[in-house]
Length: 246
Image 1 (cartoon, rainbow, N blue to C red):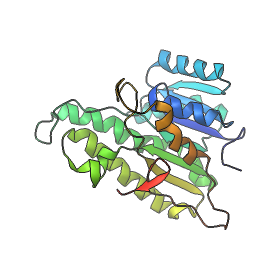
Image 2 (cartoon, one colour):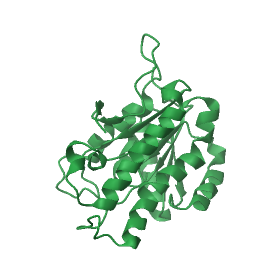
Image 3 (cartoon, rainbow, N blue to C red):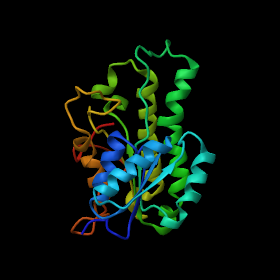
Image 4 (tube, rainbow, N blue to C red):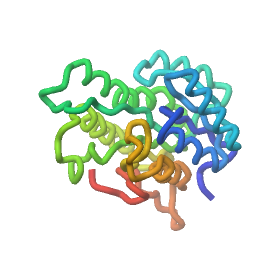
């Protein structure tokens, strides 16, 4: 049957562009109401209007994921929509070029960490309370293969970005364990979307934003149990619907 439908609400951080907007469109295309959250009022409003034109029920809200007080105000602003059933954490920034571990300024470190890792934590703390209480929900965090401890994650460089995404992986793993690996009705997962044509990925990236968001939409819509009643895998890193090593 799928988890998404007209009675579900999804909140997408970083939803005004790129992978977040593509995820919002895909999730909304399966019937869910979508709260589009981003820092810039005009961009959020434009993204929501674009989704509405595509037939999605979209609600814009401006907030800074790096600011817990801003997120609290956003939660109040969309309370009339209902608590989110799906939380997609796609707000993120790339580190400046040549930011190696001993060549990263404190300001650059804080800039990246405050959005990529702190923002993911603050968003969960603000919006996932009802998922836990209701024992039903999906939390999907955008990670990156550069944040892995294997494969692409072992080449160094872009230190704040890589380390922030490794932290996102740890956050997902820890929260999934607290949700007893899906036994409490909440699935928590990380996604490596690949190199996509977004503001961050650039125009020459091999994948479209829609291709990068496909696994996000799939995770948002999947049932908590398989046909035999077993809880599906959760608390892992996904790429193209496949589990990949941390």
